[in-house]
Length: 482
Image 1 (cartoon, rainbow, N blue to C red):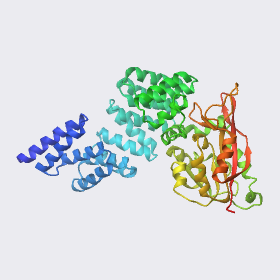
Image 2: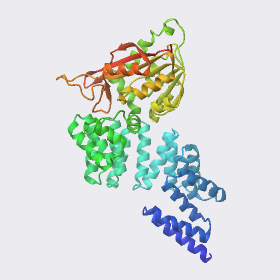
Image 3: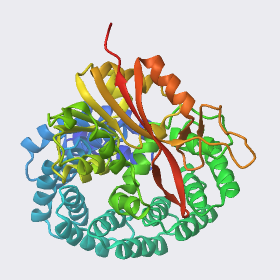
Image 4: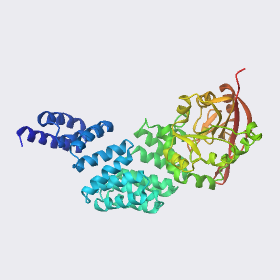
């Protein structure tokens, strides 16, 4: 080996050590110097890809890897790096192929098995994913990320107890792992086991260091246990640690410690409903959720349907798992187009085969980018994540045809036992992070946006603690131009 090659290799080793220590910027000039001395060696390629990954520039990493693997197809390290890069950029099938190639080359390679398991999990091949990930965890019990992936696979197969056991065993082995503790808290909350979620959160806070995500989930568990004052303190502490986190700020606002925002942030909605997706329908049905049936009743009085004519296409804003489409699927209505922020809710909607199109997007952004010609737009339990409705109503109006209908539900803002109405009198943000609206405000916002109010119904939204939650179901019509 030439002196330049030896020097380049030594520089790459030093740069890799710096990168392992988290000193990304210090590693960069060493890579530049190594390549100036020895050119584009395998060691420098590995290092370059790791630096691109540290920057989150997975496309740059892929470009380098594609070229390197073409030149060095036998290098399993490159295959594993590309598997991760492909997974990160959404090419899950490609990630699985690369990881499988690495496993075939060396069946003892635990990282390759973990990468393959993660890819198979996203491909829905749950049994194979679980098998790979169990082997990875058994061979490398101190790798937290392997355990988290195994827990996800077990939960997806319906073995929530096994998933929690995998995480709990990991916490014993790695007591300082915040990611394992947060995963256990989140799993408990998905199971609505808020007592154990709180226990895990309190233990995480004792082990330290404090984390905004942990504190935010602690607050969420306390809210669901009815301990609102304690929740407010947890949210306040979370906000101190990460004052710019939109999710945390919304939860703090709902606890009364911040002035209300005008809508729930996208991150909050996506996190809540991704967490909720697997049990969403069963839970709502158990609470007597009545909005889809109430929308069906209203639609039966639509002039077209009343005369036997079809009505459509339909835009379902915040479609969730597709409960409204399911409730009206036997009516001559459709095709359905659904929009939702939560990818896991959309997965549930997709398997119903009721939607012609499904789009992962914020509903306001979706409406702002279009000027559609919809005769019917539906929003079941979407308005409750908005306070100020002017932007949403303007977008709906722009996307409806003249005389098109907009049917939406929300929770009704009512005065308390002492006659005091919370919020600004038009809407208020509750402790669960949802808004309720006053009827007068809905009328005023509808008229200002160019609608006429055709109908107001007052169905029960659901039951909470055995009490009916009062709802409002409005049917608006776009006023045609004169």
